[in-house]
Length: 370
Image (tube, rainbow, N blue to C red; front, side, top):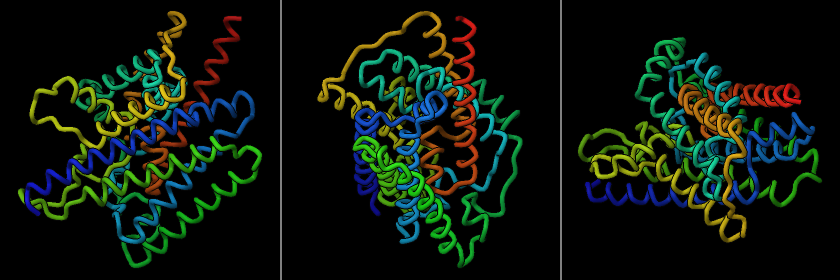
């Protein structure tokens, strides 16, 4: 493939990712899709409506991604989430910190970005703090703590860490195992969703199916459209415009850091718009467009000093926790889980546990003040 074609293909990847990010941002804003909100609804009111929306998104993402893998469109082994390095302490610690932080911040990284697009200065502050702390956790002083104290507790697996490979190895049974496991998970989630059909409002279905489908589409863009088997200059396999050098989908911790890095060093010609940066920009644009067209754009500021402190602390915890856990509620909870990665499943459980702990902490604070 000529170098000129690589440049053209890179542009296509970036533009497609931006468009999909915009769709994601508009969907989240329009349907109030929110992991933290779904957990809060259950803990506070026993309402499982938004959790069904979340479960639907996972089911669609798992089913769609598995079909792409089954037909050879993408290779799960090339995913950012299915590496052979398994770091359980990082998944648990990072997930707990992220979950607790998103409660303090009023939502996860993607939600903060959507809120910022709709006029929330709270969301904008969380976005900046999350990105700065994430960058420090990737390359700064917190990276030393992360690598030496947390990620050092781990081991290398004989296969990639997706469940089908762990159960069957890399043999002929891998494809069948992937279909069986993904099918079981997707069907179980759909059964859970359909148990309460009265809760299946237009917003719930649109948010669940739409968000899940966007995850699948980004895997296609990054893992198929942007896949070059042999780069003309390096003669190596590459996935165009990914920060990790592997196939990526939506995530909103490290990509937020890369976005700030791109904006700060824009004049540096070595800096390019990657899949992560394009998705962040797209989500903001989609949320802004949805808010303006829907008449829901509203400036929002902090209530008081405590509210400000909570959002600052929440953004910082999500920045460090998300980098440590290699993802957020979208990155690990949807993109990673759609790859059936064991680490992603552990991280998602830890994020939910951290969110429950955060909600209990907030309830305790209210009781103490009263």
